[in-house]
Length: 171
Image 1 (cartoon, rainbow, N blue to C red):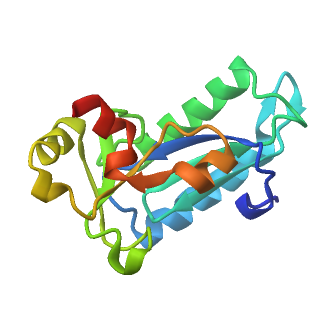
Image 2: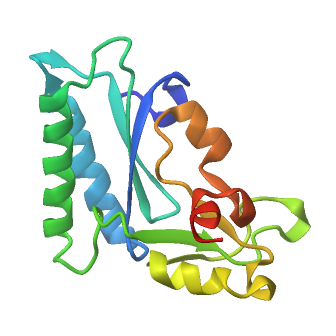
């Protein structure tokens, strides 16, 4: 099975964010189910060169090398149904498909490194409240779950708040 690390940079990605962290037991279950799904995932009868990874115990990332097999509408539909099933399997106590939730980190630039601080998920309206107070904006990075390639994910997934689409939309 191919890993995310081995996927080419041009690979297409879809990011599904949980509103909470997954437990270790849930991660094990999710990984097992993802492995089965990937082994059976096809688009127009062709096996997908793909992987599913869990990042930060909160994000499920589906990655497909479309140069080998295009992720057609039916293939994408299968992946969305898989994510819906995962949501159901988690007992309804999380959401993976609600695009009105955002994730961010406070104190994200400690030592000038992205990736510091606890990840917080909230409705976008709550982040909008943070944006109304400039003193609250310091040290916040936001996850841009709209990136659509592995290269964009590696370069622009977690960005300083002031460079995010959320900031531009609400300021």
